[in-house]
Image (cartoon, rainbow, N blue to C red; front, side):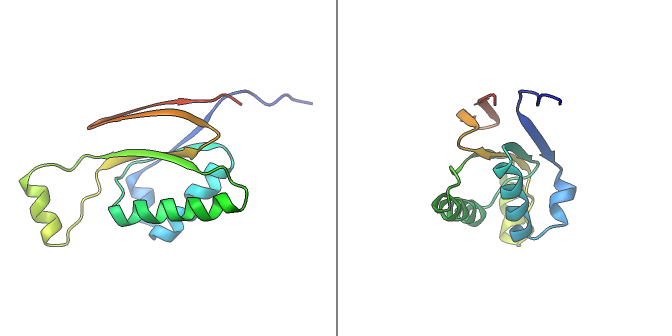
Length: 122
């Protein structure tokens, strides 16, 4: 019988992989992984509406015994060109988001262009 290794599972999801999915498919994928104690790193920023939906889903899941999520991220968009692209409805989603279960992520720190987190070992 093999002992399970102690550690943290981290899965990095590329922008290209995420682009092939609807937001509901992304949410399902994120929650499936996070429920299995995996920290998920998305290579894209979330819109304000997507953050709201992520929080709402976490609250619903928490009522079913799930401890909830922690998420942090930054949006790499900045500057006048990005404002123009949003004005015309062309959305670049450059950034990074980290999502994990509240019982895995102990502490997060977010800066304008950096994320740091402390995760609990199993």
